[in-house]
Length: 103
Image 1 (spheres, rainbow, N blue to C red):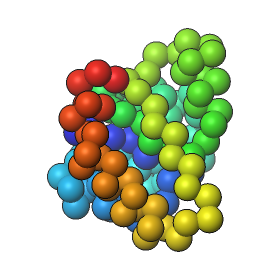
Image 2: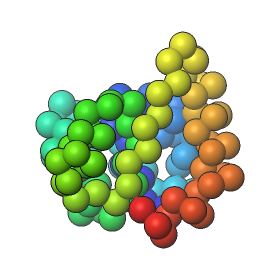
Image 3: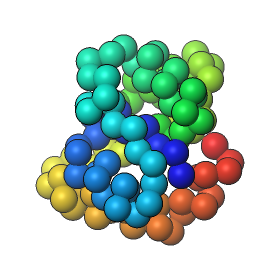
């Protein structure tokens, strides 16, 4: 699956998804500090699901109606990065097929 991880998502999450075979474009690695609108544009160009911990994407995608391929809000505050990675990895194992075509 094509995935874009926003800067608010820890590297461990991106790495875990890559290990599962997903093609992950990590904003932190590729284009740090870009505006949220540009993150959505990159996600759309790549036809990718966006994973973020930033609730502003809900405003952009759902209230303002900007185009998107799907936004997963990943807010696991208080969890260590490796635990977050394990949780996200498990969610994608269980529900990834439902996210890939219908986003």
